[in-house]
Length: 397
Ligand code: GDP
Ligand code: MN
Image (cartoon, rainbow, N blue to C red; front, side):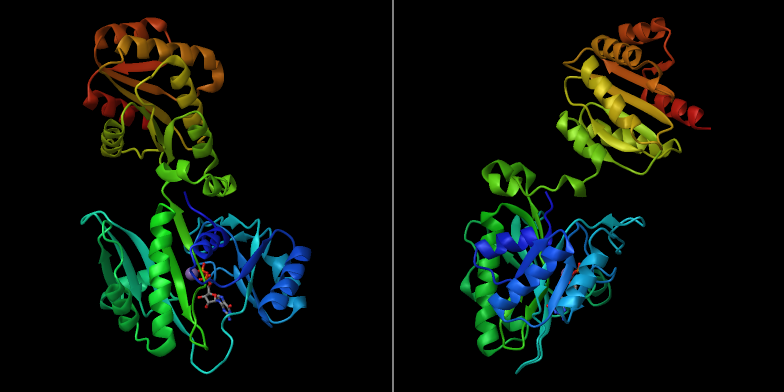
Protein backbone atom coordinates (compact mmCIF):
# COMPACT_ATOMS: atom_id res chain seq x y z
CA UNK A 1 0.00 0.00 0.00
CA UNK A 2 1.42 3.34 -1.06
CA UNK A 3 1.17 6.40 1.14
CA UNK A 4 1.24 10.14 0.64
CA UNK A 5 4.37 12.09 1.53
CA UNK A 6 2.71 13.61 4.62
CA UNK A 7 1.68 10.15 5.89
CA UNK A 8 5.13 8.71 5.24
CA UNK A 9 6.69 11.61 7.13
CA UNK A 10 4.28 11.03 10.03
CA UNK A 11 5.46 7.42 10.28
CA UNK A 12 9.12 8.44 10.06
CA UNK A 13 8.62 11.06 12.74
CA UNK A 14 6.97 8.53 15.06
CA UNK A 15 10.22 6.53 15.00
CA UNK A 16 12.43 9.53 15.67
CA UNK A 17 13.55 10.22 12.09
CA UNK A 18 13.96 13.99 11.64
CA UNK A 19 11.67 15.45 9.01
CA UNK A 20 10.82 18.73 7.33
CA UNK A 21 7.75 19.84 9.30
CA UNK A 22 4.45 20.32 7.51
CA UNK A 23 0.67 20.52 7.83
CA UNK A 24 -1.66 18.93 5.29
CA UNK A 25 -4.67 20.98 4.09
CA UNK A 26 -7.36 20.82 1.41
CA UNK A 27 -8.12 24.50 0.81
CA UNK A 28 -6.23 27.81 0.59
CA UNK A 29 -7.68 29.29 3.79
CA UNK A 30 -6.39 26.39 5.83
CA UNK A 31 -3.12 26.69 3.88
CA UNK A 32 -2.58 30.24 5.10
CA UNK A 33 -3.50 29.27 8.67
CA UNK A 34 -1.08 26.34 8.47
CA UNK A 35 1.70 28.62 7.22
CA UNK A 36 1.15 31.00 10.16
CA UNK A 37 1.19 28.09 12.59
CA UNK A 38 4.46 26.75 11.12
CA UNK A 39 6.07 30.16 11.42
CA UNK A 40 5.00 30.33 15.06
CA UNK A 41 6.32 26.85 15.79
CA UNK A 42 9.51 26.70 13.73
CA UNK A 43 10.36 30.32 13.00
CA UNK A 44 10.32 29.65 9.25
CA UNK A 45 10.00 32.72 7.04
CA UNK A 46 9.19 30.99 3.75
CA UNK A 47 6.99 27.98 3.04
CA UNK A 48 6.89 25.17 0.50
CA UNK A 49 3.56 24.12 -1.00
CA UNK A 50 3.68 20.46 -1.99
CA UNK A 51 1.01 18.56 -3.94
CA UNK A 52 0.02 15.28 -2.26
CA UNK A 53 -0.45 12.61 -4.91
CA UNK A 54 0.88 9.08 -5.28
CA UNK A 55 3.53 9.96 -7.85
CA UNK A 56 7.07 11.23 -7.76
CA UNK A 57 8.66 13.98 -9.81
CA UNK A 58 6.14 16.52 -8.50
CA UNK A 59 8.71 19.29 -8.49
CA UNK A 60 9.21 18.91 -12.25
CA UNK A 61 5.48 19.08 -12.89
CA UNK A 62 4.85 22.27 -10.93
CA UNK A 63 3.54 20.47 -7.86
CA UNK A 64 6.16 21.87 -5.45
CA UNK A 65 6.43 25.65 -5.03
CA UNK A 66 8.38 27.91 -2.72
CA UNK A 67 6.20 30.69 -1.25
CA UNK A 68 8.02 33.76 0.05
CA UNK A 69 4.96 35.40 1.60
CA UNK A 70 1.51 34.53 2.92
CA UNK A 71 0.05 35.97 -0.30
CA UNK A 72 2.14 33.48 -2.26
CA UNK A 73 1.04 30.67 0.07
CA UNK A 74 -2.54 31.58 -0.88
CA UNK A 75 -1.82 31.94 -4.63
CA UNK A 76 0.15 28.70 -4.95
CA UNK A 77 -2.32 26.71 -2.83
CA UNK A 78 -5.22 27.91 -4.99
CA UNK A 79 -3.21 26.97 -8.06
CA UNK A 80 -2.15 23.49 -6.92
CA UNK A 81 -5.26 22.26 -5.06
CA UNK A 82 -7.62 20.79 -7.65
CA UNK A 83 -5.09 20.81 -10.49
CA UNK A 84 -4.34 17.78 -12.66
CA UNK A 85 -0.66 17.29 -11.89
CA UNK A 86 1.37 15.78 -14.71
CA UNK A 87 4.82 14.45 -13.80
CA UNK A 88 7.22 11.99 -15.44
CA UNK A 89 5.56 9.31 -13.26
CA UNK A 90 1.87 9.98 -14.03
CA UNK A 91 -0.21 9.32 -17.14
CA UNK A 92 -0.52 12.22 -19.56
CA UNK A 93 -3.89 13.16 -18.01
CA UNK A 94 -2.10 13.51 -14.68
CA UNK A 95 -3.38 13.06 -11.13
CA UNK A 96 -5.93 15.21 -9.37
CA UNK A 97 -4.47 17.03 -6.38
CA UNK A 98 -6.86 16.91 -3.40
CA UNK A 99 -4.47 18.09 -0.72
CA UNK A 100 -1.26 20.05 -0.29
CA UNK A 101 1.37 19.84 2.41
CA UNK A 102 2.40 23.25 3.70
CA UNK A 103 6.03 22.88 4.82
CA UNK A 104 8.61 24.94 6.62
CA UNK A 105 11.40 26.12 4.29
CA UNK A 106 14.48 24.10 5.16
CA UNK A 107 16.82 25.47 2.48
CA UNK A 108 17.62 28.62 4.48
CA UNK A 109 21.09 30.14 4.14
CA UNK A 110 23.63 29.55 6.91
CA UNK A 111 27.13 28.51 7.87
CA UNK A 112 27.37 25.57 5.42
CA UNK A 113 26.17 24.85 1.90
CA UNK A 114 23.14 22.61 2.06
CA UNK A 115 23.50 19.18 0.42
CA UNK A 116 20.89 16.81 -1.03
CA UNK A 117 21.36 13.05 -0.67
CA UNK A 118 19.37 10.05 -1.85
CA UNK A 119 18.47 7.18 0.47
CA UNK A 120 16.16 4.19 0.23
CA UNK A 121 15.56 1.07 2.31
CA UNK A 122 14.19 -2.06 0.68
CA UNK A 123 14.49 -5.81 0.48
CA UNK A 124 17.12 -7.43 -1.71
CA UNK A 125 15.18 -10.48 -2.84
CA UNK A 126 18.27 -12.17 -4.25
CA UNK A 127 20.12 -12.22 -0.92
CA UNK A 128 17.12 -12.20 1.41
CA UNK A 129 18.58 -9.20 3.21
CA UNK A 130 17.47 -5.64 3.65
CA UNK A 131 19.50 -2.98 1.96
CA UNK A 132 20.06 0.71 2.20
CA UNK A 133 20.83 2.37 -1.12
CA UNK A 134 22.27 5.85 -0.92
CA UNK A 135 23.98 8.47 -2.98
CA UNK A 136 25.48 11.92 -2.82
CA UNK A 137 23.46 12.72 -5.97
CA UNK A 138 20.08 13.29 -4.32
CA UNK A 139 17.31 15.66 -5.28
CA UNK A 140 17.47 14.89 -8.99
CA UNK A 141 16.44 11.94 -11.08
CA UNK A 142 17.98 8.96 -9.33
CA UNK A 143 17.11 6.84 -12.40
CA UNK A 144 19.47 8.98 -14.49
CA UNK A 145 22.21 8.59 -11.89
CA UNK A 146 21.67 4.82 -11.87
CA UNK A 147 21.93 4.72 -15.65
CA UNK A 148 24.77 7.15 -16.33
CA UNK A 149 26.87 7.11 -13.15
CA UNK A 150 25.97 3.92 -11.26
CA UNK A 151 29.22 4.05 -9.27
CA UNK A 152 27.72 7.01 -7.39
CA UNK A 153 25.08 4.78 -5.79
CA UNK A 154 26.22 2.78 -2.77
CA UNK A 155 24.52 -0.23 -1.24
CA UNK A 156 24.72 -1.42 2.35
CA UNK A 157 23.22 -4.83 3.12
CA UNK A 158 21.78 -5.55 6.52
CA UNK A 159 21.20 -8.98 8.00
CA UNK A 160 17.60 -8.84 9.23
CA UNK A 161 18.40 -11.22 12.10
CA UNK A 162 21.13 -8.93 13.43
CA UNK A 163 19.86 -5.50 12.50
CA UNK A 164 21.89 -2.47 11.52
CA UNK A 165 25.28 -2.17 13.21
CA UNK A 166 27.02 1.02 14.30
CA UNK A 167 29.90 0.59 11.85
CA UNK A 168 27.38 0.48 8.99
CA UNK A 169 25.76 3.79 9.91
CA UNK A 170 29.26 5.33 10.16
CA UNK A 171 30.27 3.89 6.80
CA UNK A 172 27.22 5.46 5.18
CA UNK A 173 27.90 8.87 6.76
CA UNK A 174 31.53 8.61 5.66
CA UNK A 175 30.69 7.65 2.07
CA UNK A 176 28.35 10.63 1.91
CA UNK A 177 31.36 12.82 2.64
CA UNK A 178 30.13 14.07 5.99
CA UNK A 179 32.12 15.15 9.03
CA UNK A 180 31.58 16.77 12.39
CA UNK A 181 28.03 17.23 13.60
CA UNK A 182 26.47 16.28 10.25
CA UNK A 183 28.31 12.94 10.43
CA UNK A 184 26.86 12.20 13.86
CA UNK A 185 23.41 13.33 12.78
CA UNK A 186 23.54 11.07 9.73
CA UNK A 187 24.42 7.96 11.78
CA UNK A 188 21.39 8.65 14.00
CA UNK A 189 19.21 9.35 10.96
CA UNK A 190 20.17 6.06 9.25
CA UNK A 191 19.67 3.97 12.35
CA UNK A 192 16.24 5.53 13.07
CA UNK A 193 15.27 5.12 9.43
CA UNK A 194 16.14 1.43 9.44
CA UNK A 195 14.22 0.85 12.68
CA UNK A 196 11.20 2.65 11.21
CA UNK A 197 11.39 0.46 8.09
CA UNK A 198 11.40 -2.75 10.14
CA UNK A 199 8.80 -1.76 12.73
CA UNK A 200 6.33 -0.35 10.24
CA UNK A 201 6.49 -3.52 8.08
CA UNK A 202 7.37 -1.36 5.10
CA UNK A 203 8.26 -2.82 1.72
CA UNK A 204 10.02 0.35 0.66
CA UNK A 205 11.20 3.70 1.95
CA UNK A 206 12.60 6.23 -0.48
CA UNK A 207 13.80 9.53 0.89
CA UNK A 208 14.90 11.90 -1.86
CA UNK A 209 16.24 14.29 -0.85
CA UNK A 210 17.70 13.65 2.56
CA UNK A 211 18.92 17.16 3.31
CA UNK A 212 21.96 18.41 5.14
CA UNK A 213 20.80 21.85 6.20
CA UNK A 214 23.04 24.89 6.37
CA UNK A 215 23.34 24.32 10.13
CA UNK A 216 24.37 20.66 9.67
CA UNK A 217 21.07 18.98 10.55
CA UNK A 218 20.04 15.87 8.63
CA UNK A 219 16.32 15.70 7.72
CA UNK A 220 13.94 13.91 5.39
CA UNK A 221 12.48 16.45 2.93
CA UNK A 222 10.48 13.91 0.93
CA UNK A 223 9.12 10.47 1.82
CA UNK A 224 7.88 7.74 -0.46
CA UNK A 225 6.63 4.93 1.77
CA UNK A 226 5.01 1.60 0.88
CA UNK A 227 3.66 -0.66 3.59
CA UNK A 228 3.47 -4.40 2.97
CA UNK A 229 -0.27 -5.00 2.47
CA UNK A 230 0.03 -8.46 4.04
CA UNK A 231 1.18 -6.91 7.31
CA UNK A 232 -1.51 -4.23 7.54
CA UNK A 233 -3.54 -6.26 10.01
CA UNK A 234 -0.81 -5.40 12.52
CA UNK A 235 -1.16 -1.67 11.85
CA UNK A 236 -4.76 -0.51 12.04
CA UNK A 237 -3.58 3.10 12.10
CA UNK A 238 -1.74 2.69 8.78
CA UNK A 239 -4.71 0.87 7.25
CA UNK A 240 -6.77 4.02 7.84
CA UNK A 241 -4.23 5.95 5.74
CA UNK A 242 -5.29 4.22 2.52
CA UNK A 243 -6.46 6.83 0.00
CA UNK A 244 -8.79 5.11 -2.45
CA UNK A 245 -8.85 8.22 -4.66
CA UNK A 246 -5.27 7.41 -5.65
CA UNK A 247 -6.03 3.89 -6.79
CA UNK A 248 -7.46 2.47 -10.00
CA UNK A 249 -11.26 2.41 -9.38
CA UNK A 250 -11.74 -0.92 -11.17
CA UNK A 251 -9.03 -2.50 -9.02
CA UNK A 252 -10.63 -1.14 -5.86
CA UNK A 253 -13.99 -2.60 -6.88
CA UNK A 254 -12.43 -5.97 -7.73
CA UNK A 255 -10.62 -6.20 -4.41
CA UNK A 256 -13.89 -5.45 -2.61
CA UNK A 257 -15.41 -8.62 -4.10
CA UNK A 258 -12.23 -10.59 -3.47
CA UNK A 259 -10.97 -10.78 -7.06
CA UNK A 260 -7.29 -10.46 -7.79
CA UNK A 261 -7.42 -7.95 -10.67
CA UNK A 262 -4.73 -5.77 -12.21
CA UNK A 263 -5.69 -3.31 -14.94
CA UNK A 264 -3.47 -3.36 -18.07
CA UNK A 265 -3.44 -1.45 -21.35
CA UNK A 266 -4.52 -4.14 -23.87
CA UNK A 267 -7.71 -5.21 -25.67
CA UNK A 268 -8.28 -8.83 -24.58
CA UNK A 269 -9.84 -9.34 -21.16
CA UNK A 270 -8.91 -12.53 -19.39
CA UNK A 271 -10.41 -14.54 -16.59
CA UNK A 272 -8.31 -17.38 -15.26
CA UNK A 273 -8.06 -19.54 -12.15
CA UNK A 274 -4.60 -19.44 -10.62
CA UNK A 275 -1.91 -16.79 -10.99
CA UNK A 276 0.48 -19.06 -12.93
CA UNK A 277 -2.11 -19.94 -15.53
CA UNK A 278 -3.10 -16.28 -15.70
CA UNK A 279 0.48 -15.34 -16.62
CA UNK A 280 0.67 -18.11 -19.24
CA UNK A 281 -2.66 -16.90 -20.66
CA UNK A 282 -1.36 -13.36 -20.95
CA UNK A 283 1.67 -14.67 -22.86
CA UNK A 284 -0.64 -16.62 -25.15
CA UNK A 285 -2.74 -13.54 -25.87
CA UNK A 286 0.38 -11.62 -26.83
CA UNK A 287 1.53 -14.45 -29.10
CA UNK A 288 -1.77 -14.43 -30.91
CA UNK A 289 -1.41 -10.73 -31.67
CA UNK A 290 -3.57 -9.32 -28.87
CA UNK A 291 -2.62 -7.44 -25.76
CA UNK A 292 -3.96 -8.48 -22.34
CA UNK A 293 -6.35 -5.87 -20.92
CA UNK A 294 -5.97 -7.20 -17.41
CA UNK A 295 -4.68 -9.84 -15.10
CA UNK A 296 -7.56 -11.56 -13.33
CA UNK A 297 -7.27 -14.55 -11.07
CA UNK A 298 -10.74 -15.71 -9.99
CA UNK A 299 -9.24 -18.24 -7.62
CA UNK A 300 -10.43 -21.72 -6.83
CA UNK A 301 -14.18 -21.18 -6.74
CA UNK A 302 -15.17 -20.22 -10.26
CA UNK A 303 -18.93 -20.37 -9.60
CA UNK A 304 -21.63 -18.36 -11.41
CA UNK A 305 -21.44 -15.50 -8.92
CA UNK A 306 -17.69 -15.05 -9.21
CA UNK A 307 -17.71 -15.51 -12.97
CA UNK A 308 -20.37 -12.81 -13.26
CA UNK A 309 -18.42 -10.50 -10.96
CA UNK A 310 -15.36 -11.17 -13.13
CA UNK A 311 -17.20 -10.40 -16.38
CA UNK A 312 -18.61 -7.18 -14.96
CA UNK A 313 -15.19 -6.01 -13.78
CA UNK A 314 -13.51 -6.86 -17.09
CA UNK A 315 -16.23 -5.08 -19.10
CA UNK A 316 -15.75 -1.83 -17.18
CA UNK A 317 -12.64 -1.41 -19.30
CA UNK A 318 -13.93 0.09 -22.57
CA UNK A 319 -10.83 -1.08 -24.46
CA UNK A 320 -11.82 -4.76 -24.14
CA UNK A 321 -12.64 -6.26 -27.55
CA UNK A 322 -12.81 -9.94 -26.52
CA UNK A 323 -12.72 -12.02 -23.36
CA UNK A 324 -10.74 -15.20 -22.98
CA UNK A 325 -11.75 -17.47 -20.12
CA UNK A 326 -9.11 -20.05 -19.37
CA UNK A 327 -9.97 -22.40 -16.52
CA UNK A 328 -8.24 -25.56 -15.46
CA UNK A 329 -10.61 -27.90 -13.71
CA UNK A 330 -8.72 -29.72 -11.02
CA UNK A 331 -10.72 -29.75 -7.83
CA UNK A 332 -13.30 -27.49 -9.42
CA UNK A 333 -15.13 -29.45 -12.15
CA UNK A 334 -15.25 -27.92 -15.64
CA UNK A 335 -18.98 -28.57 -16.06
CA UNK A 336 -19.64 -26.59 -12.87
CA UNK A 337 -17.62 -23.69 -14.25
CA UNK A 338 -19.37 -23.99 -17.62
CA UNK A 339 -22.72 -23.79 -15.86
CA UNK A 340 -21.41 -20.75 -14.01
CA UNK A 341 -20.48 -19.10 -17.30
CA UNK A 342 -23.87 -19.90 -18.87
CA UNK A 343 -25.74 -18.59 -15.81
CA UNK A 344 -23.62 -15.45 -15.60
CA UNK A 345 -24.03 -14.77 -19.32
CA UNK A 346 -27.80 -15.29 -19.18
CA UNK A 347 -28.05 -13.08 -16.10
CA UNK A 348 -26.14 -10.27 -17.71
CA UNK A 349 -28.27 -10.22 -20.86
CA UNK A 350 -27.21 -7.33 -23.09
CA UNK A 351 -24.30 -6.28 -20.93
CA UNK A 352 -21.92 -8.54 -22.88
CA UNK A 353 -21.18 -7.06 -26.29
CA UNK A 354 -17.84 -8.71 -27.06
CA UNK A 355 -17.06 -12.27 -28.12
CA UNK A 356 -16.21 -14.70 -25.35
CA UNK A 357 -13.83 -17.57 -25.88
CA UNK A 358 -13.88 -20.24 -23.21
CA UNK A 359 -11.24 -22.85 -22.80
CA UNK A 360 -12.02 -25.41 -20.13
CA UNK A 361 -9.61 -28.24 -19.54
CA UNK A 362 -9.37 -30.90 -16.86
CA UNK A 363 -12.07 -32.79 -14.98
CA UNK A 364 -15.27 -33.11 -17.06
CA UNK A 365 -13.96 -30.89 -19.87
CA UNK A 366 -16.02 -32.73 -22.48
CA UNK A 367 -19.28 -32.30 -20.58
CA UNK A 368 -18.42 -28.65 -20.12
CA UNK A 369 -17.92 -28.09 -23.84
CA UNK A 370 -21.27 -29.75 -24.61
CA UNK A 371 -23.01 -27.71 -21.98
CA UNK A 372 -21.77 -24.45 -23.49
CA UNK A 373 -22.52 -25.51 -27.05
CA UNK A 374 -26.07 -26.56 -26.14
CA UNK A 375 -26.74 -23.29 -24.34
CA UNK A 376 -27.01 -21.48 -27.69
CA UNK A 377 -25.14 -18.50 -26.26
CA UNK A 378 -22.60 -16.55 -28.25
CA UNK A 379 -19.70 -18.27 -26.53
CA UNK A 380 -16.88 -20.02 -28.38
CA UNK A 381 -15.86 -23.15 -26.54
CA UNK A 382 -12.50 -24.86 -27.02
CA UNK A 383 -10.41 -27.32 -25.08
CA UNK A 384 -6.85 -26.73 -26.30
CA UNK A 385 -4.64 -23.80 -25.39
CA UNK A 386 -3.54 -23.21 -29.00
CA UNK A 387 -7.13 -23.36 -30.26
CA UNK A 388 -8.00 -20.65 -27.76
CA UNK A 389 -5.18 -18.49 -29.12
CA UNK A 390 -6.31 -19.02 -32.71
CA UNK A 391 -9.86 -18.01 -31.82
CA UNK A 392 -8.64 -14.87 -30.11
CA UNK A 393 -6.73 -13.99 -33.28
CA UNK A 394 -9.84 -14.67 -35.38
CA UNK A 395 -12.18 -12.46 -33.38
CA UNK A 396 -9.70 -9.60 -33.21
CA UNK A 397 -9.47 -9.12 -37.01
P1 GDP B 1 9.37 15.37 -5.81
O1 GDP B 1 9.69 16.31 -6.93
O2 GDP B 1 8.01 14.75 -5.99
O3 GDP B 1 10.42 14.38 -5.58
O4 GDP B 1 9.21 16.28 -4.48
P2 GDP B 1 10.28 16.68 -3.34
O5 GDP B 1 9.60 16.62 -2.06
O6 GDP B 1 11.51 15.87 -3.46
O7 GDP B 1 10.58 18.19 -3.67
C1 GDP B 1 11.14 18.59 -4.89
C2 GDP B 1 12.20 19.63 -4.71
O8 GDP B 1 11.63 20.78 -4.06
C3 GDP B 1 13.36 19.23 -3.82
O9 GDP B 1 14.34 18.48 -4.50
C4 GDP B 1 13.87 20.57 -3.40
O10 GDP B 1 14.81 21.04 -4.37
C5 GDP B 1 12.65 21.47 -3.39
N1 GDP B 1 12.28 21.74 -2.00
C6 GDP B 1 11.69 20.92 -1.12
N2 GDP B 1 11.58 21.47 0.09
C7 GDP B 1 12.11 22.71 -0.01
C8 GDP B 1 12.32 23.79 0.90
O11 GDP B 1 11.99 23.73 2.09
N3 GDP B 1 12.88 24.93 0.41
C9 GDP B 1 13.27 25.05 -0.88
N4 GDP B 1 13.83 26.18 -1.28
N5 GDP B 1 13.12 24.04 -1.77
C10 GDP B 1 12.55 22.90 -1.34
MN1 MN C 1 11.64 13.76 -4.04
